[in-house]
Structures are given as structure tokens and as C-alpha cells.
Length: 301
Image (cartoon, rainbow, N blue to C red; front, side):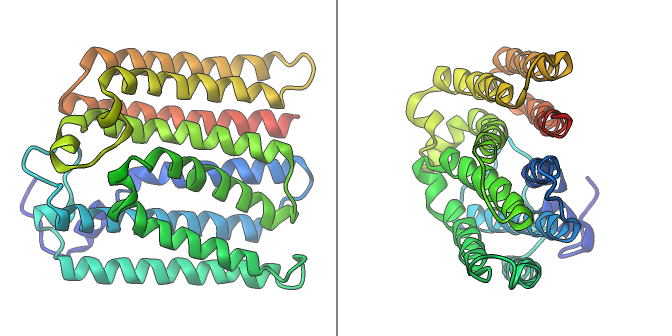
């Protein structure tokens, strides 16, 4: 890469890691599909959820970039994509401003959801303020504390499953259903496969940095099969939404499972090193595929 101008727009674009926005889009897509299937679709709340989720994902990426740099986790032996602060593309001071601005803009978008729901929700929408506060707080806690203690996978299940899927559905339908819970589990499990690939690739470096992910705690073999079973369980949960004899609804989840197992086999063959970064791309593709599949199944009824 040619020399990067410090704090340039391109440097900020790289720091935002736009490829990770798939993880923010999928839960909103699923939650909106559920609302549409129930005749409760509302465009403005769905759009605001999409913008808030993307904003918080970018803020989390900035936070992760800065605090891993400050903790010294981004060493020269890093296997993942290059980080902005560690490479000197963005100064720590500028990154702090970037985090603050991104979080504030995301919160303003969240207030739009509150305004949209005012007088419509049973309690005036105050629960949305609480939910937004949790999103902001845990965006900081994840990078600074919780990911180092092995809580990352559980937080993905909550903040890429139950919170965004349930929240997106709630601001459109003003209620919850058992299908929302199942869809939230599918979303969280599938998106967690991306975290597992990262942790699988970085297991040796994480151990040296004191980052006690589940794979560091339980070993490579555990990480290998953890990735596999996340996809299998997510696939099985898809059949909750299939009513009667629906060949398309049956085949689509199995197609995702085929792609997931194919990616898993490549991951196991590579096993370590920077070549595992190619598995990140495949996993992201599979995640998006599942998001589209579950949305199609839900909408087609």
C-alpha cells in the first residue's frame, strides 16, 4: 500500500472497516422481514434501525482499533487486517474524536426512533433509550474488558441477535413473538461464526496478549468444531419458519449449511496463519446468505 496520509478520509474509511457492516445489516434485515410478514412493516423505523446499527458498528470498530492499540494487542505479528492506529494512519487523539462523533451521530439517529414511536408505544418509548444506552456501554466494555475475558461470543448473541432483531421488530410492531426469539438466535449464531474465525486465527497471539477467548481457553479443536456447530444449529432453527410442504424453504437452509461446511473444511485445512483471512470473506458471504434465506422464508410464509 502506498504511503497513507495521516487522518485522511481514506484512512478513516479503512478504520471504519465497511466489510464488517454485514453484521449490522443482517439483524435489521431479519427483524424487518418478520415485521413485513406480520403486516407491521414501517419504512422510517426500519431505516433508522439500519442507520443506527451501522453507526454503532463503525463506532465499535473505532473503539476496537484504539483500545487494542493502547493495550499493545496490535503487535508486529498481527495476522488480521491492518489497524489504523497501529499503522499510524490515524492518531489516537483523532480516533477519540472519531469515536465521540460517531457515537453521538448514532444516538441522534436513535432519538429519531424515539420521536417516531412517541405516543405509539405503551410507555412512550423510554425502553428504547435504555436499549440504546446498553448498546453504547457494551460497545466500550466489549473491547476494553469483556472480550479479554471470553465473553465475546455471548455478547454477539445478544447485540447481533436479540437486541437488533428484537429491537427492529419492536419499533415496527410494538410487540414480540416466539418467531422473533428464534430469528434472533439464528442471527446471533450465524454472526458469531465471524468472531470465531477471528479468534481461531488469532489464538496464539491472543494467548500472548492475555486475551482469554473461548478458543484460547479450550484449544484449537474446540474452536474448529464450535464454528461448525454454530452453523448447524442456526440451520436447524430455520425449520421453525417452514409451514407445511415448502420445498424452497427446505432447500435454502440446506444450501447455507452446504456453504458453511465447505468453508469450515477450508478453515480446518488452512488451520493457522494469514491465509485464514480468506475464511473471513467466505464466512461474511455465508452470513449474508443466511440473512437473505431466513428473510425469504419468513416473507414467503
